[in-house]
Amino acid sequence: MAEPHVISALKDKHAELQGHIQAGELSLAQLRDDLAAVARALRVFDPDINLRTIAPRRPVQRSQWFGPGECARMVYDILRPATEPVPG
Image (cartoon, rainbow, N blue to C red; front, side, top):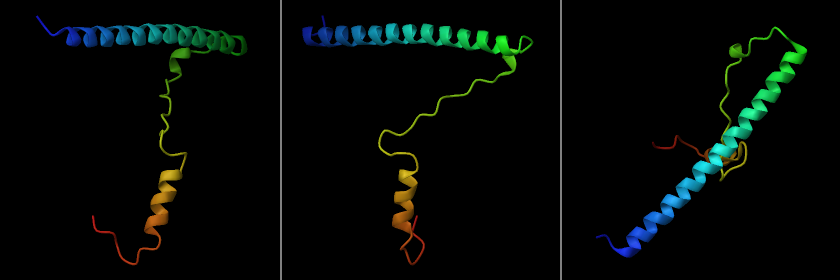
């Protein structure tokens, strides 16, 4: 039989993953409700709209470490004073 601390840690991980799945399912249900509401609003303004022609767009995932454009600015600030190409 496995060590008790291993079983305990795996149970904790299992419970954590189940919690993430439940939260994700709730989030998905809310997103579906929001999408249906937007679809109804679109049909108010354009009853003949074909919603299947609207391509999904992936959300932009921003870096946790840098603000928009901050990383590029830092790189340019380092490269700007260089007198010769940086070896690579």
